[in-house]
Amino acid sequence: MKRSLLAFTSIVLALLGTSQITQAADPAHPDQPIVAPADALSRLKEGNGRFTAGNLQHPHDSIDERKYMAANSYENAGTISLGMTSEQAAKRRAELAKSQHPFAIILSCSDSRVPPEIVFDEGLGDLFIVRVAGNVLNNEGLGSIEYGVEVLGARLIVVLGHQSCGAVDAAMKTIAAKGKAPGHIQSLITAIEPVVDSTPKGDLDMTIKANVKHVVDALRASTPILKTRVDSGDVQVIGGYYTLDTGAVNFLDGK
Ligand SMILES: [Zn+2]
Image (tube, rainbow, N blue to C red; front, side, top):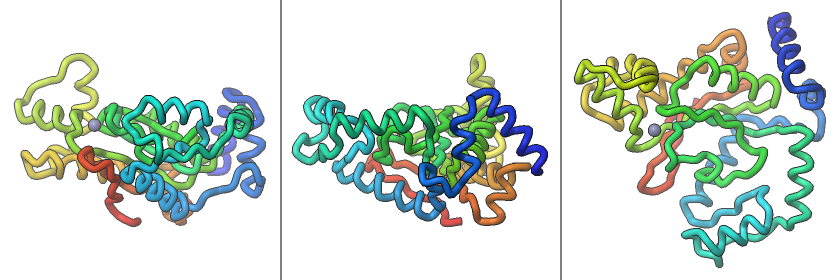
């Protein structure tokens, strides 16, 4: 385990340079506070609460960006908190240029209606995100998630599915028709097929939630990195479901 971690870290070092690794090697470093899973989850819930209430803070964006959004978006300009000055935003960007310490990892669908930074009202440097249609898990996604845990210090992983997921819908329809999707889209169908096969036929919403659970279970059982950390309670993997109608994220279990 230690040997493989060392090899992994060496590879990452070679790829990225040393500054992040130096910080990540010291969890007590004040520049890299480890955010416990429960605290990270609370923060996501609070951010989604602001989003659904139309009271976005856009943390870590510049005041200029916020003024632009206030003037040009559907949001009510009067409710936007313009709390960060251009100087503060520049300082934040300078900090992030040196290193990043996102407090949560999100594996979400590519769907344009479910961007995690927006639905959780987070900003630059806050979330480490893997997006792929149907929030399916592939090796590259798993490697990215492991990197987020091992190197960047995130301790909460959220698998985020959503209402009316087109990828899950396409999988159900393609499998029901015993057909094949064009090109590489078929790879998404193949990834979701075990879930479709084990879920009562015809219920899209139930299949979407089962697909989230399927990926959550895969992450929790993933060796050699995640399983050990999940079993010890160091890392938490949790499923979430985003409702397009309300903007609310419901977390599917508390484990
Ligand atoms: Zn989707």
